[in-house]
Amino acid sequence: MWPGRFDLPSTVPEPHRPCGACAGAPFEGRVGIARPGRGAIDEIISVFRYYRNMALTYSDVGAHIFGEREFDAAEFGRRTGNPRAAKVLSELLVRGVVARKRRGRYRFLRPSERPDLRIFEWRRMREIALGGPDPKTWDGPTAVEAWTGGRYRVSPTVFTAVFHVAVPKGATPNWERYLSNHGVSLKGRKRIGARIELREVRRVRAEVLNGEPVPPREVVLSMIRAHPGIYANAEALVIGRPGDA
Image 1: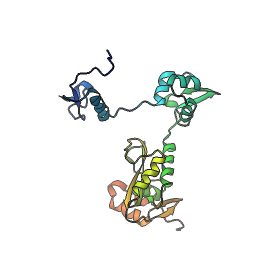
Image 2: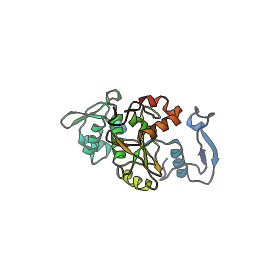
Image 3: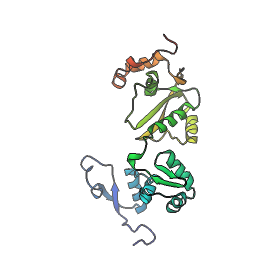
Image 4: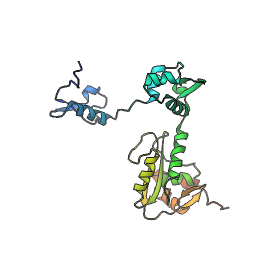
């Protein structure tokens, strides 16, 4: 059955990106012509890369193991194989996945019981962006959001926040190091959650609005007028300069 390696034929189907004709077909029907000469393991890795299988998390595993019954840190560590069970449970508590029922006893919450954590993740990513190397300023949609007091936001979905930052030319490597130290990557393109996008500019023009670096008001108004398909009536929501009557 399992002779020490994947006992698969030397010729396996070559995966391909789903097309309109096969998007609704079962997995077996969504393969291309067999391609000889490649190892079975390489082909399996290729399938995983094409279809972007998501890794298991402790949230997934814990909910599967315990359901809604109570457990303690010792059992969690034993069942999941993690020697730092208390640290993992502390993180799950912060994320609203687990609730502490009483001292030393926990329970995984049902999806309907869990809080909306978007505000916490977005706040964290905003703070990371604001703490990055100077000079910098909000850019694009984030600048419009700042100048409208948060009343006009542009986002791919209601579960996504993109923080656009303008930085000087050549500053990206320095930002990459800074973001890497905070567990953030510029190369990923998250479909949900929060991320930071940089744009290098010849000169960073910035002023302070509500404690945050923003482009001058006239720059933002010019951008809104140049892109009516994106910003629509955002100009009517732009606030005056700090201190204006």
